[in-house]
Image (cartoon, rainbow, N blue to C red; front, side, top):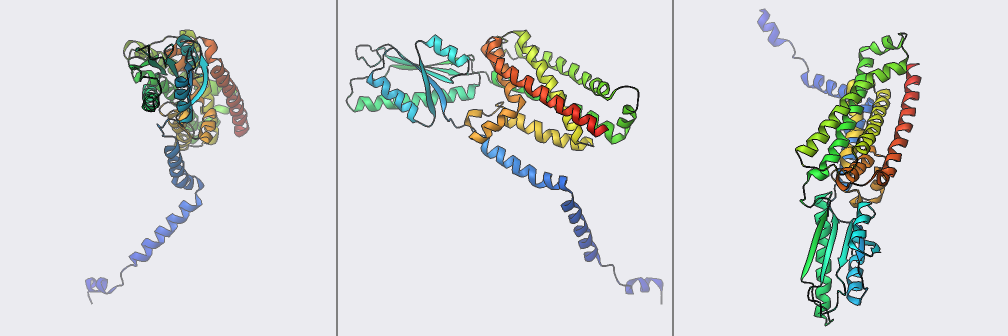
Amino acid sequence: MSKDKQKDIAPKPQTWKTFRAFVLKESKHILRDRRTMLILFGLPVTLMLLFGFAIRTDLNDVRTIVVTSSMDETTQRVISALDASPYFSIVGTSPSGREAETVIRKQEADIAIVFSPRFADNRYRDASVQILTDASDPNMGQQYAIYAQSIIAGTIESLYNKGYPVETPSLVSTNMLFNPQMLSAYNFVPGIMGMLLILICAMMTSVSIAREKERGTMEVLLVSPVQPLVIIIAKAVPYMLLSIVILATILTMSFFVLDVPLEGSILSIVGISLIYILLALSLGLLVSNLANSQLTALLISAMIMLLPVIMLSGMIFPIESMPKILQWFTAIVPARWYISAMRKLMIMGVSFTYVLMETLILIGMTLLILTVSLKKFKTRME
């Protein structure tokens, strides 16, 4: 019998069983790898929760201050209608529009309703209502004004139809504070600053140290006469200098290209930014303690820095519209406090005293994370 015929008669390999064995083997490897399972199931669940609850443009409990010289029946009914709606919450009154603007500048209120003197008196045909709203976030500021105008006009019209001696105001005007041109750059530039600085400092620092571990050169550096702390600082300094250059570039482009004002003190802006950069470097060191490879460092950085900065810092989606539990969680996101401080300083032009709380929180976070990171790093290296 020829060799060709013998090959035809020989049994064929059991391809299906072999394929099934390989699939079973790979499935067991995946199920045994906790990190893979965390990525496969933890990431989708986290994204669904964040996108489902954090991405909300609905209004909810917008802090409202009322400016009126006479609390007549019509004014009281309008205020009650605003307070009874789920969109607005009356937080106080103010004697004048200028005082109300100061309250909004302090971020103790989001919108002010200013009634003209003797609003309900029919003899004053020029009775009007002015809406003052914080337009540093132009999208939300415009929504505040539209919702408020709808409730005010509807309430006055219902009173007029029921026979109350009041006429609908001839004009309901809106004053967009801090951003009269409604430029979106006013809102996004502080957010971009918070995102870029933390990504460059934290993510790149963690990857740099993880690369040394992955290549096995970290041990070589640590057995040298140089102290480990000096090595870490030396690796972090270039990223800090790079971040300072990027900060200067962003501020220059914001002012000269995007026409975003720098109303506040430049020293305050730079000083708080340096604190934020140091905090980001501390986060990078902490991530490097958890990661033994560059890929792991990138995944951890994306999970604990990139997503929270975008979703939970107020950069894109207003924190006030999120569920209470997410609002509490945003308190541990450093970018939230940095972006808030930059908006106050750059857009509203407040003094340093108005951002003292944000500054103290960033300093406290920096000291805590830096202490934990350095202690953990020494423990791991020993």
